[in-house]
Amino acid sequence: MKYNDKTVGLTHIAVRTCYFLLAVSVIIFPFLMKAEKGDFYYFSMIAVHGKYLIYPFYAVVPAGYIALICLDKILCNIKRDVVFDNANIKLLNIITACCLFASAVGLVSFIVIAVIYLSIETVLLLAVGEAFMALVVRVVRNIFKKAIEIKEENDLVV
Image 1 (cartoon, rainbow, N blue to C red):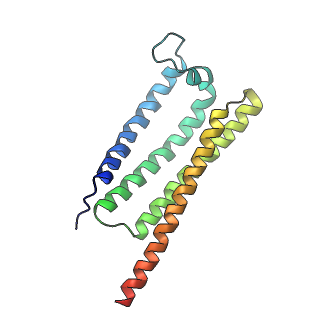
Image 2 (image 1 turned 90 degrees about the vertical axis):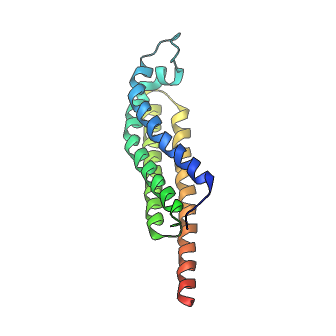
Image 3 (image 1 turned 120 degrees about the horizontal axis):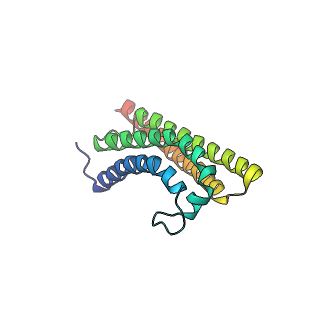
């Protein structure tokens, strides 16, 4: 039976768009750092503080891609009606690890920037947001794990 929910398809499109957007951001970040006031692509946060943010950003890009790949695989599994499966649990564990890694990089970056250079609260907010996402993914993972246990118990009863 094929899964027929359009929201999964839209989410799949959004995830695959994020592949592209992340690649574009990797390429244009150095150009945005060099932007001057008056340039149409001037973003004060990146232009002023980019030299402090570029290394942490590039450090978390691989984790971002890994998380996107795992999310893509989960969506493919859902489309094939493979929902409550241990493979999805493993993918959710990887996504959690990626979020925690990004959060740790953000927290260390915030501390280094605050102590050595100047305080950029945005980095701390991003680190907290990444940690929160790790928590949310972990809760979803625990729900899936429990559902798998219930499914396996029911399969044994029949």
